Image 1 (cartoon, rainbow, N blue to C red):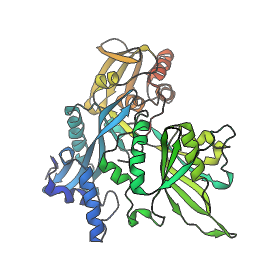
Image 2 (cartoon, one colour; image 1 turned 45 degrees about the vertical axis):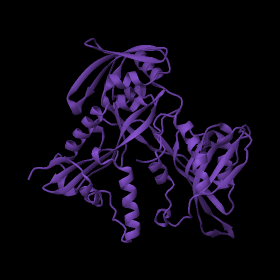
Image 3 (cartoon, one colour; image 1 turned 120 degrees about the horizontal axis):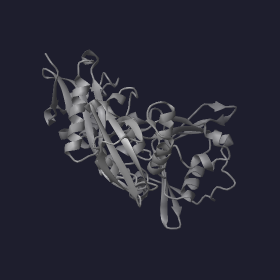
Image 4 (cartoon, rainbow, N blue to C red; image 1 turned 90 degrees about the vertical axis):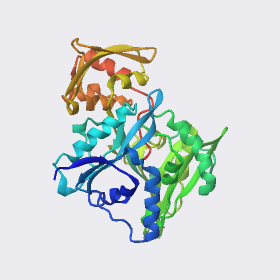
Length: 411
């Protein structure tokens, strides 16, 4: 029986998530209360009308969901389709299920007026063929507390106060909004997304403590916060070697960054401070006495896929004025189009042409540069795209943005 691509309704919702258990390698918890709690959270977050399924008869054998995310792009905020829970059962791979679901998903995003989709990739090799490009990277750090002094030019830390969850959330939300508005790739949190961020079931802790919350106080009130756990270690030569696990540290000022990092680096009975998702330009790398003390490892963050090139190019702001002609190939749609991008006073205008281009590239690589991490010259050196030296330099300057793109959490 051929695979059929269809939509989801409420009666299919539990089967939709059950279909993910094998591809994502998990089981629903045997505890009924825990299972119900997870199911309620999933239902609150997921938009049923945006989901697509691959059916073999009546059985769901593939899943794809989408969130409507208000995401920051350079100079603005736009609605982005957050692609999520993409799976196909191993028994039904290579039968067109993923292509069919992705085709409908991208068409649905475009019909809704969303010129871009974005995702976190569980397997980074899957999404190139659908036009997704790596738009942001993140840093994972493991800081040795014994060698974690702040640089002599770092701001003098101000007081940090520990609070409980009920007090924390109304203090943290305005800080998050102010920071998210200035960093491409971050998306605004609805109440349901805040509930998810602050979720703290015993099964979420994996042997660590419950979440701890702290806020930094600047001259104008709360200007930063940190969410973290503590993990007890072994006692080495009668000294504790526990861990601080930073889940989120958001600061709106340099002093707030210094204050919060100083706070997490100051816990007793701790040997290591870890953070698994930091922007590549996080202040920690300049605050520490020695950059290598952070032991950074880079990983992929959010991936982007432009579905409407002219609209996308006009929607964002640019760092410098100029003009470049680009020819964009989109193999997924078997399409090749040439555009002239003209930027004046930081805003772009786009015209469609038949002229010879300055730069020829794939939709994946244009998408990778879109959020402000310029990749034109680097990708040209790798042979992924072609263009004149002048045009590549011009494009890098135009598309660059301060701050670098980053997404705060997996969706």
